[in-house]
Image (cartoon, rainbow, N blue to C red; front, side, top):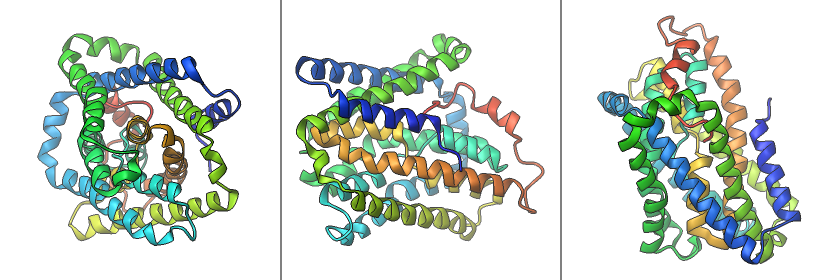
Length: 337
């Protein structure tokens, strides 16, 4: 199964932070730069999302409610159920990161790509991922306050304000300015895609630098990492099964079930990293480790499932073809999630 080249860049960034962590003034500069980069990243998200398509997507409200329930109800419940694995299989910090992973919103770009590949309802995947990301700006920190408590690095109302100012305000600003800059962003989407990914890399470098300076990496062993991977594999398998057969039980058609499965079983690295940096502070590196591992795992597994879905005998001939889906997605979804 293929390894996303971007994951290799993320691992390289972690290695750089381990060898040359930012300290003192350098750490302050890196922290400020990552904050500005993430704000700009969500500004681009807002400028890409078509308000008209978002409003049209509300007509399929049952599907979106199902995806939101999977993302912000079922996932967190499974995360709470995993508490029994601490401390036998997972350390406290790794479990906290795993629980935080279950609170993060869904992806956008990869949900669209896999739904298109599997001949599912692509417009529904666009709207479901977008609604999840938008809701997560508020829902994720509120869930973190309720479920993580003091484990979330001292979550407070100030943390929520910081997340709103860093993520939601730039997103809304992008929506307001979309009518004037939307065309420019569409024409330069490839270049701006590098800005997306560069912003995430900067956040990873800042978070793992703080972790190195604090010396928290001595708390993780190879056995613990193997245990974490096993737990995440089970978590992903359970969510893929629940979203597919749950969608069938709720009466959704095959195309909608595909969108529900891919949008409801994945977690966003782009949204989770900046939130973790605010909520966990110096402990963000261990907190985002489960999310980074789960992100690569979900990409590999969902790629295989999407290819198999595309060749199912019941594949609908009226589904949106990949070429048309790519046109629908242009200007609406981030390149990294």
